[in-house]
Image (cartoon, rainbow, N blue to C red):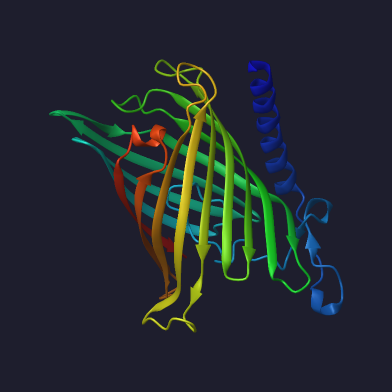
Length: 296
């Protein structure tokens, strides 16, 4: 069993690295489809200019890592969770920048946890990440739009009270839109290195379901699009004491894409967080998260 998991880990890591390198280096221009020519571009013509990937079709997730292309984005999140008398707050500032089809990101989180008069606080791991699509399918009428991609995240410890281990996570993702309905799927293999939980490997997964309601359908003042979302975020340790014990958390929320002013679009959102299984219930009884995104 361990040999299978380590083989899967190696393939996922190598695939993520190769995909990022190949896609970043394979971009080329192709004539517009209106001239009767192909809309394909990139390495092996695997990408499609008609795709809505990176065009504001997909909402920014709350619990699940973002997988869409972000040209220029600043994001501020706050998450409060509780388990009985124990409470936790996490504030995060994030910057994302697009380079061709690829996106790089930097996130700085701060945590404060308290229970029975004992408080732990400090900067959590500094998160560095990159992602890029490697294949896109767009149906002839544009109704179905699917993007497959790879990503890699490196989290570096700050040696604060809440941050001691390094984490490396290769990922694969799919962003699917069918009309106004969107589904973002993400799968990752987390590997920890360090003094606390070093050697722990975890399978991570997440799904973000959204339905975009344009201003023409719901003419709210100042709102270009309203997106109700439902999310599932889970993880399963593959070794150590809790191997095989799944933890699944859900969120129900709403994000609004406001009108653009002076080249900046604000996208506020809020989500209610709750556990789905016993594994998640041990860590979270309930939670609330607010998110403010600035796209420019």
